[in-house]
Amino acid sequence: MTPIYRQRVRWKRATRAHGAPRRAASRAQQAVAIDRILALPILDRALAGVLRHPRIVQWIGALGGLVMVALALRPVFLPLAEIRVGETPAIASVSVTPNRAADLAAPKMSEAAIVALITAYNQASITAAVLGRADVMAPYLASDGQAWADVQAEYARRSTRGETHNPSLTRWGILRIEIADDTATIETQEQWDDIASVGGAVISSRRGILTRTVYYLRRAPALGSWLITTIISTPMIA
Image (cartoon, rainbow, N blue to C red):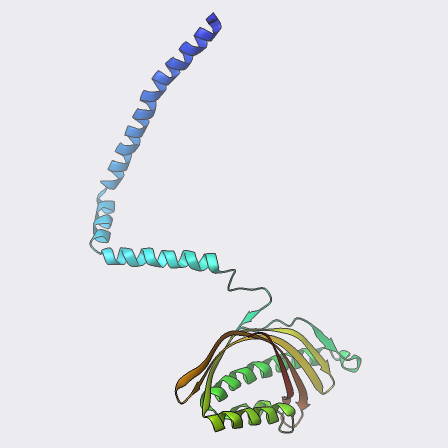
């Protein structure tokens, strides 16, 4: 063993010998500082008050856990291509005929009116299903259109069987809107839940029914609004 190596070994041993007491002293000082902080009257009273109400502490801990879970799952419930019910849907694409392009305000007003109509119609269809009354949807459908005929036929079938439905629209989004003079087309993607019963007994319970639906509309000048003439709904996931 060379003299230089012996010196290095002695230096390391000395450093360790001096360092260990310093670390122990540092830990002792930290413990003393913590004890002094905990001994403060205001902190002591606060801790004593909390310990007298353990159930509140449990609820606070549970609430904190729920908040952490909600933040972790937030991306799952906020898909980029879909919109929750009750929110204003964003329009994916809009096509306007040339003879209406000159009036820049009219297309925007028409788009808003069409979105409002579809929103109101979907809510009315839920109410109609729960009440078993097709006439609830009548204000949004053209009386001579295929959509109104289909609705009447479906509700006649349900009445014959004594069948009731309890649907809910969980989320939906707009894929495109096309406006051509007094007619328009809007395509949506919708996700529904539906529970069907006969005589109070559940015969079908379906969750997450994903459909792509195309609504054909025409302007009703006498009413100052749009009416739905045809609805074509294609199941994507049932």
